[in-house]
Image (cartoon, rainbow, N blue to C red):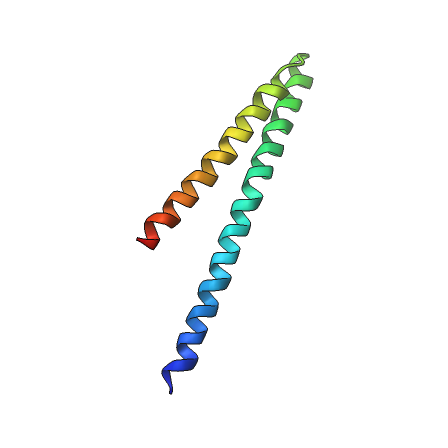
Length: 80
């Protein structure tokens, strides 16, 4: 009977840990996209060009997807 509260606490900790991890994954993609766009926008203003924001937007999207796939792959390996 004493183990039951400990097991419940571990399960709740696991749930909150997983929820925090997946929330961070959900924020990584739009965050990386926004950061890439802002870097490109700043460089466009600095150099007087108009295409760097698109280039860095695409790099931000690729970076966000890379982080998403990396984290999901890591989670799948832990479940095995």
